[in-house]
Image 1: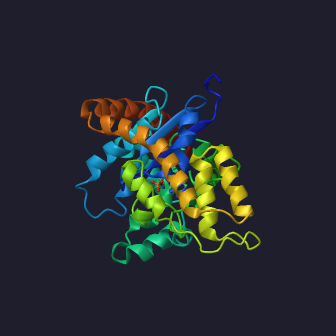
Image 2: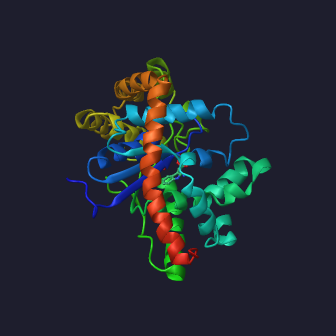
Image 3: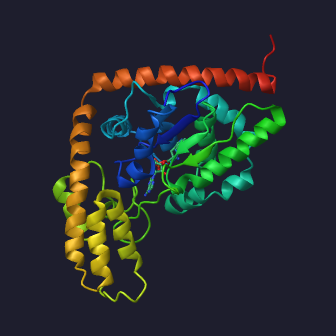
Length: 335
Ligand code: TYM
């Protein structure tokens, strides 16, 4: 499909707060790669968002390089998309400030991700954390994007983005289209963790998360230790940990392999050890080429700098055009 002026605009981002994992890949990156051939795309490393939880920034540069390298290793082409760093697009800050006037403290306090972070870091409940969804809305609205490829955990942030943009349009005039969370599948994804509790995550649950940088041995080991259950009574409802394992298989295993294990589950002859061995091996097959490619890109500082500069230039062009409309609509134009 030819990318054109009337094509939907795509925007998304990933925080450089740790190593990327299978959840980031299947929830977000896999969609980015497919969308880059169909739409005008803006993808960024959300370094300003990372500051809401980081109390020190020694690792920030290495983490930003890693996220950029992993984005490219997963198949993003910096010539086809704008791949940039959030802090390089200064217009983000201005739109964030303006949108803050359209966000109510009560609704921000009710945001699920805010409440989770308060529990996790009770000593660092800062105002940036509270207004996290406003900054995310600024990222999206800055490009007047309508499609936002993200995992299930970001659904509420997208709903809030629509609330802020609708309020803006209502108060000042139509500037922003409605943005929606997007996935090529039927629904937004939540890739489960291997311990059967919660989801894969960059910073928590490290032994139950498979990272794109994990060695083959580590992947096999993590999967081997994944939680199963003791019973193989096919008449009983499948336990959550086994449902999770089958869901993980659907991401990396061939359909006939999955069918084989579904059949053995049904007949009560399944051996979870075999299933986990197969799952581990298929994860290794999937991850090892990405890991190796990312490793070589990550150490090429000159190439990464070029990409960031090129990406920021493209993103700022689009951001500046939007900010002209925003200032005009508000009446911040006195001469
Ligand atoms: P972040 O960095 O937590 O995650 C990056 C992307 O990965 C998805 N994801 C998952 N998907 C499925 N299963 C999982 N276990 C899983 N874990 C993470 C996330 O949904 C996300 O798509 N707030 C965003 C970053 C952001 C952003 C934006 C996103 C900043 N500005 C503008 C979209 C548009 C975040 O923290 O993602």
